[in-house]
Length: 563
Image (cartoon, rainbow, N blue to C red; front, side):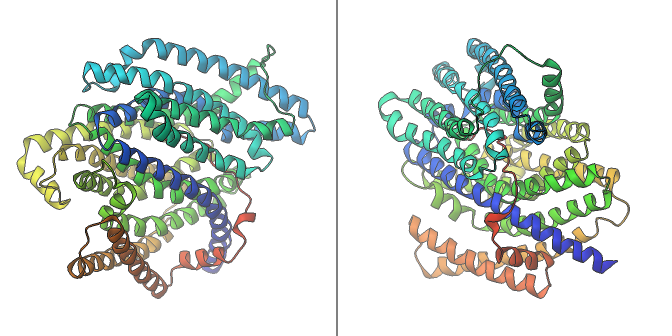
């Protein structure tokens, strides 16, 4: 029995790992350009009132994107189109695209117009801490950025066709075009047009994201056209299937908007620091957690649909083990090397050393929940594959509310309990840095997320697992945690050693120090995992020897506007 389970683990892990590596490769390219975008913002503006307004300007467009645009998501639409094409009914597939296109454009157009009109009213809730002058700029920028959810929503719809015909490269390059648009806004539009130029850069990036899909649609005869013939029964089916996922994404976006609204009441630059650190911690979550979860979703759906519950559960365990295997060591390295990471990626121009230290501290607090965030993504997809969409929605509703409550609560304690404030500042080594109260926001976010994962895992085990079926996770958890601790210790030791021998006072010196410490840590981790006979390490090495680019998978659809 044990040998059968191990054989299944090796087979399924290898297949899913290959697909995850392919998705992760695409994600890595996009994330690198996203970091270039963030470095450009840090260099040109630094954590400032202007950058705070820029980030706050995303909030309403982002909520619209997650509340409306994701109703036409790839995950839901592809089965509808594939079903029609399998029955050799391409004309019906074209008609479906035209219907969705018409309904979506009409719906999001109305919502965008209402948001445009109500923006002065909404701005008081988005940024309660801004001055009247700052709020006026916020209104202007947000109104321009309302173009983004329209273009990105259409791109989501069009990429259904792109992916259906396996044109993954085209879809993978779309986020790159989006970030290039923002970078053009920073360097070309901002100097001549001011803050409006930044917003126009976002709109340009979103337009390019959509534009890249159109040649594929045209080549396959799927160019979208408005139509008056709407099958409202089918539209209702699509809407109901999309609704649980859309509500979950909208909930997360609203929660993040509330936390950022709190940040606007703190020192100038708090919103910028929060977003910089949030974007940095999203890198491993996107490359590891999202890649594995998306790669596993088709197999999970098929296993459950065919009534193979044992296979479904084993798939969950297989992917969870891989996520833990990667995420724990990455979490340790991010915490230990946080200052080096932040300074090398963001540290230039108007981004000062104090900004670096505060962002690094916020990054460390966000990183505490990297494993939890990645595993939540897997469990949510497990529930979706089983057709049980209410459970994750209910759990996320409760615990995203808890995240906001914790952010408020920790902020109150930080302000009124000197011992707690002293402990946090000393632990993160920022006692002399102004604006440390903003650290309570990532702390509340991370603790709420960890509790969210724990509650969802308890419910998931109750719904799907029998006693003892989740035990393989304990072995991986022990091995990866052991490797992570020793990797963190090795990296910290190398930082201390090089810091005492060499004068580390520049970006290149920090890059060399961080790179050297990271390499030594990885060697330590590899040795430890080899000695512990890690099955996950063996699977990864086997997958790397194969032609990963030939793996069959579906690239994930976007779930949030890139800021």
